[in-house]
Amino acid sequence: MSVTPLRLLHRRLAAGMGLASVVAFIAGAGLESPMPLLSAAVLLVAMAWAPPADSQRKLDFVWRILAVVLAGRAIYNIFVSPDDIMLPMVDLLLFLLASETWRESGAAGDTRVYTLSFALLIASSAYRPGIVFALAFVTYTGLAVVTLMVGHLIRKLSEHKVRDVQLQRSFLLRIAGMSGVMLALSALVFAAFPRVSRGWM
Image 1 (cartoon, helix red, strand yellow):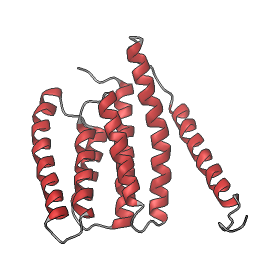
Image 2 (cartoon, one colour):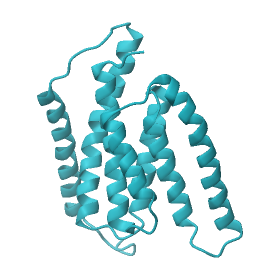
Image 3 (cartoon, helix red, strand yellow):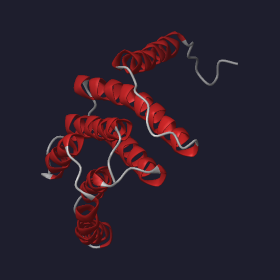
Image 4 (cartoon, one colour):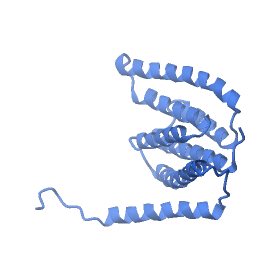
């Protein structure tokens, strides 16, 4: 099955969301394991190339085996090992994000990629967020708005049996810019909102 330009755009945007969340995690947690770099490399490849359907089915079997191994490692750390349980869980999260990005897009697969990248962004905020995390967060927000819009458009086109449409780059940039305006207004409201103690009344 050929990939339409709109689906290819959505694939690249979703991989970009995942990459932004990986950068946010590395900025806060550092590189305690090679998994963030490996998942970032897989996401970069997924932005430029997608394996054929036959190869995807073969890769799915490999992904499942590795996921079971990483899940077993995480369970072992939770119940047996005294080591930090966060690192194996994040490694599993990174692996699932990278493997889902390689799969053929669809409503269920898209939702999994959105959820996994957002969960990684939330996990990143538990470490030491700094300026790089802030930049990755803003990038993630802009990409998320555009990706959700493109994903919604793909589903609507599929419902109405329309093959594809062309989206101008300027239109996508305006959508991303709107998310930046919303973030700036949210920050302004947060900074200006009065804060009082609980005993003020």
